[in-house]
Length: 368
Ligand code: IPM
Ligand code: MG
Image 1 (cartoon, helix red, strand yellow):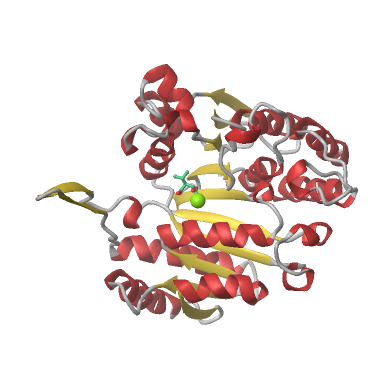
Image 2: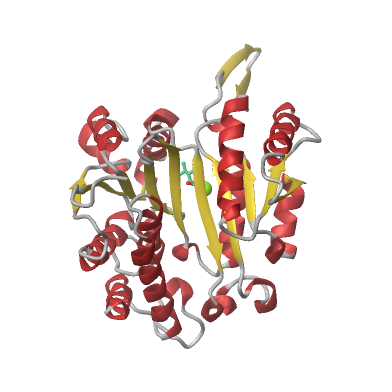
């Protein structure tokens, strides 16, 4: 760990849509917490996504990637919007995020889905199925079909074209994320469910074999396996059966959105994308809300800032070694919710919705 006085370098990438609004509010929380974090936070900011395309012609510049590599962590808002939808994939806002994940080698993406009792009625499932849910999806983030080569579209002649992507994993890529899942499960309920399509895909059986081998190193953690389609169903059917789910990049993308809805709103869900720890215990990390840029509500002050605020709580926990401050911040979010403060996405019938800034005010008030 770094010396207590050394500043923590946080690179802030607000992005597009509601990204800048939720980041702005989260930075109010960052400054309110300063002092309780053990180290001063040094902030710097850059463009990413559509905003970077407009300014620089690319969704993330080499310079921003270099700054991210030198930072202690990245706090990311959201990217994307209709304006850039017609760009080729490499020049779409999302590619900026994918490049950061890849170049920082952030292979373990932690997506907790926690259902606060106050919000259980906002879930699409019945209260008894979700109340008290505490599920963690760990998604592999730097390999699989998102990055596999070859990929492309080819002309087969006679007016027929063909598009293809490649799902590929090395044993190292599977092992490191599965190992991360077991390590993290040790701090939770000691159950890992590894999710694949071993019944159909080469990469599936391969994944399962490695998970089984790694699992032997963790006899104190229960390992189960599940096919991805069944997992999607089980998440809807009986979500509380899960503790930690570990899965590949694409299944993790889909299953984490499904798990998110159990909690009532995507607007509440934080994520951490972590690299490997070095000898000093430091690791590259990017923190971002699971929700997207929500262009339909951008600029209106309607967005829920809690997913980004909770992402910063994950930063306190995973990058700043400040678990007490993380606990305090999470408790402040819970008490704002318990007091009935609701943004539009989580307001029930008859409940008045507050603005992005007012929700943050409530969190700051609870922080005291
Ligand atoms: C996510 C998003 C991204 C993904 C997009 C924005 C590239 O859906 O983080 O889940 O597919 O990984
Ligand atoms: Mg997604």
